[in-house]
Image (cartoon, rainbow, N blue to C red):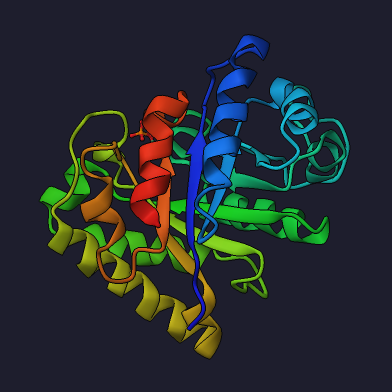
Length: 246
Ligand code: PEP
């Protein structure tokens, strides 16, 4: 088993060219944590300036369309974000599943588009609070994995991010035991789907990761890193999370 930890940021609809200095500071600090892979997904308008300003950092997109080109006003394709300098994209974030009605099949197709263009994919899954309170969290999440995992998924280019919807941006997190249980269930589902390759696929935890809770969450069994929203916007908060993964 050779899984390196990955700490990935998600800037969502935040940031501007003025914020690129944060990425430079993140890249400088990441260089001191060679055991951790660090990446930041930024708004589409910032991919090119970020990739040019901070070539040492893996810059990614927050979403791509499944098609390579066509009549899809307002969308960007995997080929387009690659040309802009992205090395990966998040797909299936719960905010897109909720706001844009994305289904598992859409998420799978987007991840496959990324792979066609030689980009990495972070595939997000996670249950709502209602689903957890109804005792359905594991069933919901493993079904999302089954429906969203791209064809030929391997640890080389695909990671899963487990993000309980109720933990995103709320300051609430699951217990370490709950995270371990869910990551174990995801690993078991991956094993059923892709066999031994499942041991190479990173499973990130996401949802209100902060410098205060990162060390505990990042060292739970089967947690191979973190997907970080709010705390990735500044080096002051993101760098201690990278350090906690090391
Ligand atoms: C996210 O949006 O992927 C996320 C985990 O957000 P936050 O860290 O702000 O909860």
